Image (cartoon, rainbow, N blue to C red; front, side):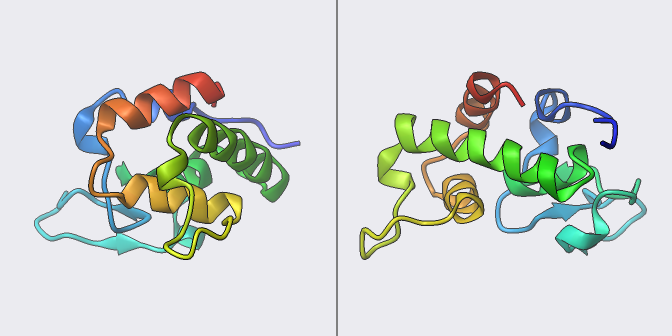
Length: 122
């Protein structure tokens, strides 16, 4: 199993490292904003700002580890923020969708992201 390089908690120590609406960006480092797809994140040092789902991809190198982290995060989100763990039709979403929906929800704050990450221990 790959070694975990960091923790999501450590990625979000700086408020500016958290974003909404994109998996990851360069934070305008180098003069212009660049967005990164999930597949580009793990080995790209230019990716310095992350949504919660992008942070999972950055920290956990393989799909098994990512799946376990996503399950923990989604479970915490469903328990603490059930209103943000459903789509408009009230159907249950998959783990990654729960995470993205929570991250990008208009009411979600960095403090709530940090709390979810801490409770999930990822």
